[in-house]
Image (cartoon, rainbow, N blue to C red):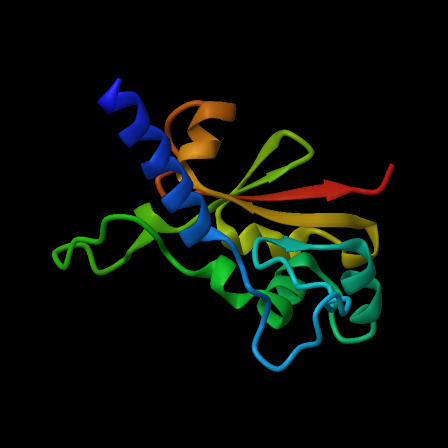
Length: 139
């Protein structure tokens, strides 16, 4: 019985500790501005930069350059860092290395999303230690 009460008390304490009191300086109940998702470039964002970028690589470079960086284990002996760079998949078809984004016309892109290595492995199997830059094209 004591263990059950202790577990409930612990759950309540954790729940209260995780609750948010809002951001400092904001009025209670005030609407928050939508936050930009760091792993997604939306069609609206792409359209707003259409004049600045002609291909998907330029879009990612301007809006989410962190998607182009290597992730995961890095060996100082391997200065290329190629194994930790994300790979590109366009509409569920393997497209190649990050540089191949330059071959994707910006006007045809609906969304660009970074998918972590773990999620990429679940979806497409092994071979994505740096994750995936997934490009959805307009139909």
